Length: 65
Image (cartoon, helix red, strand yellow):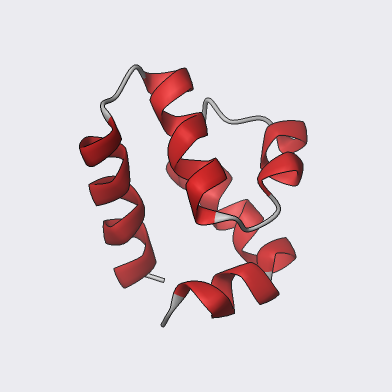
């Protein structure tokens, strides 16, 4: 799966993202709207992660969906 598929079907994947990262609210995920950069930034902010760590998490999540 590639990120274009995630972005195009964000409503479906939003619930999976919230299950993965429970600190993210519905409103925050609505603002992300499938944009990878926005999701990485939000993970950095909410979980205090560095950019590389957040990107690895997103990549891992993508590989498992």
